[in-house]
Length: 334
Image (cartoon, rainbow, N blue to C red; front, side, top):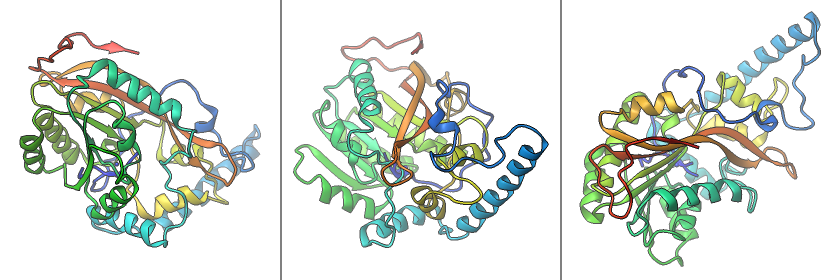
């Protein structure tokens, strides 16, 4: 999750995320890793009865206070957040693991699902653009099924890190570009021709205005044959549900999560309802959608990876005709 890039995974490009939309329809199957605090950090007040409810409420107030205090450190300029974050990672001032980078091997099932779905529903003879590529961790995986990959991120620091980490992978390149500016995406579209688009964890941190702009940029990049695959955080409930699901309590917030709160935009919902708003049926054909689970780094040293309920979808511009694939007039729910 990097940012949108202005196009990120990846690091999203962003201004403040909008108020949370209603709880998502496709949050996926129940997952205890996303509903309960991390092992060893049980939430106070789990006991039944008035005393438990009082303890829970008190813990919630403490957690809200901790989050508010941490949020004061965020850079004010949305675009500056991402460059400041990646600069801190590169220079060692941000030492916690990057929350969305699953430890080696732990995110294979998630990534395998992404790749298999794209291979089935996209024209893989086309290049792919990874919008919000961050440090390029997923861009490198995309190179296994597409002839060329262009990772795009709003942060020059992220792009520099991606170049350094993946310099030896052929037909994989990176550039800094604000993909919430459709004119910038149009320039890349003229250079590449028709292309597919991959987005992981970008739309949910954008304002509604920037969500619409990023969708317009994606439409320009797709041309007549490309398709977009998106996967986004879609946690049921409030922001506190998200935090508690990753082990936060009023007494303690795990290091990777604390670092994200201090430096990055607030996460939001992006499920079927939000997708329908950003990609309206008059302009887009929904080809497939479903629930997913995003894997994070362990919240505690030696612990299991975190899991975040998510939503994925594959779409094509309404008038698209797709080489070897059908244009998909009927949506498929997986």
